[in-house]
Every structure is written in C-alpha cells, then in structure tokens.
Image (cartoon, rainbow, N blue to C red; front, side):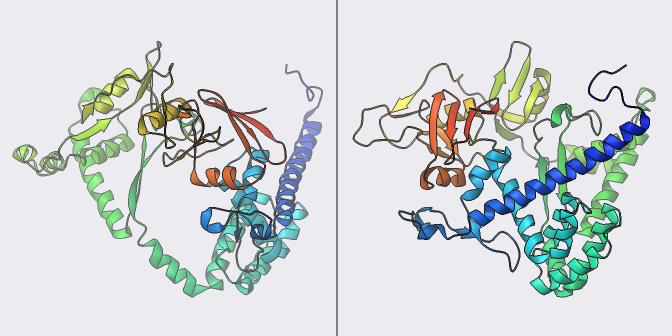
Length: 435
C-alpha cells in the first residue's frame, strides 16, 4: 500500500483531487502568463531615454516588438532577469511574452477563455504563434472563429485555427508555401540533454543518432523509393539468424549504404566492379576531444557519453588528429586583453559553453568576458582561464550594458551571478543553483 498525503482517498475522492489538480495547474499557467505580461508592462519605456544609456550602436538596450501588429514594444534586456526568475532560457521566455502579448492585444476573445480556464495556455499559445504574421483585422477573424469553438478537443481546435489562419490571408499562405519549398536541407540531430537514456519513446539514443531531412515532395518520394529498393535487396541477402531484423532496420541500413555511393550502386546493379571505382568518397578528417573516466565511459564534446568501443566505431571512417592532453588542473595566463585560443579551449573544456544562468544554448560562437574587469594599467596576468566567462553575444551585452549585473568567477568553472534585483545564481558545469 502506498503512503502519502492521498493514501486515505477512495476512488471517487482521488478523481475529485485529480480534477482539482488540473484546475490548479491551469491556473498556475495563467498566473505565470499574467505575471510575464506585467513584467513587459513595467519595461515598455524606451531604455534609450534613461540617463547614461549605452547607444544602440554600441550594444545598448532598445525597444523590440515581439508580437504581431498592434502589440507594444518591450525592452530587449528585460528578459534576461525574467528568464533567471523562471529558471528558463531567454528565448523561451521571449516566446512566452510574445504569445501573451498577442493574446491580450490581438486575440482578446481567446484570452478571456484562457483567463477563465476554458482553454489551456499551451493551446492558446500555439494559436497566437500561428496568427503572428497576420494583420490585426485578420487576427480578429481567427479570434472570432476559434472562440466560438473552444469546446473542441485541443487537436481539433488547433486544426480549426490553422485552417482559419490560411483563410484569413490566402496570399500570405501562398508566399509561405513558396518560401517553405526553399527550406530544404539535411541535419544531424545532436542529442538533447537526457535523450541518451530517454525511454519514453523506446530505448533512447544510446547507440543511435537522428538524421533529419527536408526535401521537395518529389525528391522525398524518390529517395524513399530508392531506400525501399535497397531494403528489399538487403532483405533478400539476410541469413537465417538475421531473419528477425525489422523493416525499419533494413531501411536504416539502406540509407547508411547510400553514404558509400559506389557500393550502393554495385548492390543495386549486381555489378561489383563499381564498388572499386574512384567514385568512392574520400575519408574525412576528425578532431575529437574526449573526457575519459575510470569506468571506461568517454564523453565527446557535442555528442555526449559513449562507450570506448563506440568511439572506435565513430572514428573508424575518419582520419584522426590526436591532440596533446590538456591538463585542466593548472591555469594559463597572458598579459594582453584578448583571451587566446588556448585559454578559450581550456575554459570551454571545463564549462561546456555559455555560463549564463539557466542557459540552454550549446553554441560555440561565444564572447569570452573578464568577470574581473580588465585594467589596462593593472598588473600582468589578468587574462587567463582563471578570469574567463564564455557568454553568447546577447548575454554579454546584457551583462555589460544593463546596470546592476554582477559576475564573479569563484572557481575554475564556477560563477556567481547577481541580477539587478538581487537574484543570486551559482553556475557550475553541473547546473545552475540558487546562491
């Protein structure tokens, strides 16, 4: 038997508590949305009118418009501190504010339904995002149609909203179709934190990675046909002990075979001489930084934890460059202002990237800030990995130009932040913690 605050409830009482919890969750989401809107209202004045404001041309704060036509502008820098309070990323916080502003100023009927807990915040936010590029009048058309059908299930309500958005501006949708046709590409799916062992949709990504492609419809169908043809031939060559291989696995093997065009062509045409032709792609170069543990687990930058045998497989198709071991138990300093590449590398190996609180950015295009400001008339050795904070350009601008931010480097990879209104966060390679 379970123990806890609900262990004495019978079935009816448990269901009643679940209904109450649902309402409480919806109310909490509404309250957060309203508080974010209040924060935007408090930061609607032009920051360039404030005394001592850094000019926009020098990276200073400015008003930006996040929502659609008819929504008020907001201070760009105000979202940094708000994101810390929410323990979320700045972009996610901006998105929430943009959706809230659209709901309040462009979709008032839907906003009322959200406020009354009839429509969940996440559903309303999706509709707000759909309508952002519409004129204010077109958004009102969608608002009216959606608000008359709020009793629909979320999926059906979103389908209705999507159809209505298209009807509200057919020419805009035609342009959208034309633009989308140019957004082709293929992307390697770097795993997000937690994906490696995520069992929600299967065994996770312990030995696999995702590859996503956007192609023209005809190209996608043609590629799908070739993959099917290769999969059929692979199936015909499977041995008895391989008969349990699934169709998905065969198609994956077929796609992987296309990485070696000559071999794939030879397999499709039964002409094995092709596989030795010079059309085979050359081996590629690879430089990899590995962090090894005594348990034989290697962590590769941008890839994540791997077994040593997986590293061997990863490097099997590459020309490998071996770099000398970097001893991170020491520090390196220079007597100039810029952080040299060697120092930046040491800092990034320790920190993993941006050290702004609650950041979700994985970019390596970072500014390297001096937590203790550099003094051109000061002592030598002010620059080094003992005084180096990697930050995205926006985080660097906020820290530099918005009054009240304080940053201390309290360890080789540990940083203490204080926001203008006194929120304190400690950032380490293991996460962000209250100070």
